[in-house]
Structure formats: structure tokens, C-alpha cells
Image 1 (tube, rainbow, N blue to C red):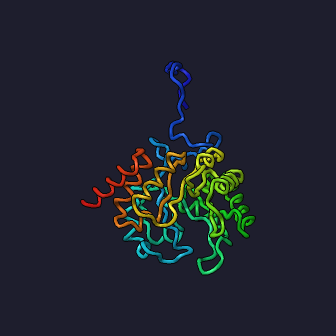
Image 2 (cartoon, rainbow, N blue to C red):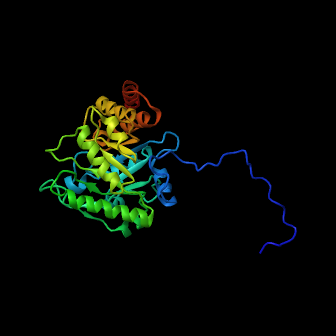
Length: 291
């Protein structure tokens, strides 16, 4: 116990200096618990407020797809350039070095493969997410499919985990082959995810009306890279997404299937965090590839 006598009276209150909470301005996070915010601020860069996520969870439905045959060789060298990695618990345990300091968005749903109908998914246990120090849990939500109700229920359960354990929920919108990736659909899908408790949402970009999709979603949107594009087109996609209000991109095939993945992830990072225009970023990609 401190002595009651002899204490120096406190006087350095800096009353003319406004209090600061620090960290990036994450949309919709003002009223979240400290633990949720702390994990979000590991994912979103404190300077730009954006995130470059590296996705390599494709194997849980596709198996050893091109570029992911040897994750230890193709992906591990790229992790240092990412703000967050998105993968399954099996790959995390078996391949990713435990010395990795990059936060993990843990693929949190599992189920059917490309051999059958997709999205009939169940959730991983929250205990595993805690043991693996997940910065976010990522269930898939299939709006407009026959599994819509089940996947929304999965998302709502994850939102309960967010509230109880302080781990953000990333709602991943799945787009079936018969669904259009237009602003009307994406606006519906992202809003449904947010309304059911997603802390942030991963969805696709559309050329017309994406600003409305972002404005109508009360939490941050991260844009999926989708199918493999030529490098200059993938950089243009990233630039359009960020310019339209997305707070990051989560790219997989457009990085690890690139001719030079290490150069590509750095070029995408320049777009996401420095606002580099596509032509400049493509030149950066070419310069890095030539070294």
C-alpha cells in the first residue's frame, strides 16, 4: 500500500489536449468491445486504414489447386507482405510457422467440395479459433442459394462468438454460378451479413454502383480477388475497389498464380496502402520481377 502521507499531488492532466483512442478508423467499430477492436486493428493498417489480405483457403473445397501444391514453398515467403492471411486450421497448424506475426482470418466453415453442391457448411469450433489466436473468424454466407438460411444461421452464431470472445466475424459472401454479381445483389448480400452481426464483409466488386454497395453496408467491405486475371487487370481491380470505398482486398489466385507472386503482392500493397494507380503499380510489378 502506498503511504497516505508524502504523495505528490497529481497535476499533469493536459486539459488542453484531446483524448485519443488510436488505431485506424474502422467503420462501424465505435461501439465494439476492446478485444474486437484490438483484433480489427491488427488486420487494418494504422496508416491507410486498409488491409491487404492473402487468401489461400481454396484447398478446403478444391484440393491442391495450381499455386497451392506446396504452400510451404509458394505461400510462406509471401506472408510478410500481407496484413492478414486467410486459411484453414489444418494448413495453419501443419504449414505456417508459429513464429508468424501476421494476423489470421480463420476459415471457419467447412463442408462440401467442388464435386458436389457447394455451401452446405458447418462451423469449426470456437475453441480452435481461440487456441489458434485467430484475429477473425470467416464463415461463408450463401445469399440466394438453397443453403441461405443455414449459412445465415452460421453467421449469426459467429456473431455470438464475437460478442462473447472478442473475435471479429468476417462474413464471406458466396456467389453461385446462377447469381449476378451486380450492385443490387451485392448490396443485399453485404447488408444481410452486416445486419446479422458480421464485423466486416468480404464480397466481390462490380463496375456499376459499387459505391452504393459500400455506402449501404455499415461495416467495412473487403473485395475478393476472384478468378485469375492478368496482372495489370488485377491491379486495376484493386484500385477500383479502394477508390470506390472498399477498405481492402483479399486476393489469392491473383497473387499466388501470378508469374511473380512476390512482386505481385507488393504491387497490390502499393495500391491498397499508398493509392498507387494501376499503371504505376504494374510498372512496380515489372521492376520487382526483373530483379
